Length: 74
Image (cartoon, rainbow, N blue to C red; front, top):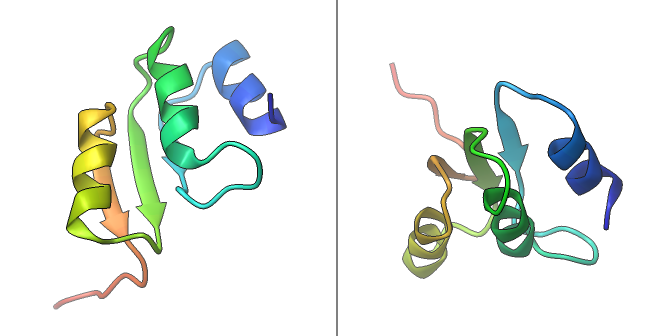
């Protein structure tokens, strides 16, 4: 288990920002593990922005999914 996942499971956070492309477990696997015991809001922020990946993120319990790079609109 990675340090980030251990911290997310053992500490209290208001929000978790999670990338899909992580060493070891990918972000979807981390999200699965988190959702077994935590309901902390999770925002996926990742370069993997294909529609299938966004659907997978939402179906696994992500609260939001933002593909990078972000574009700011006025």
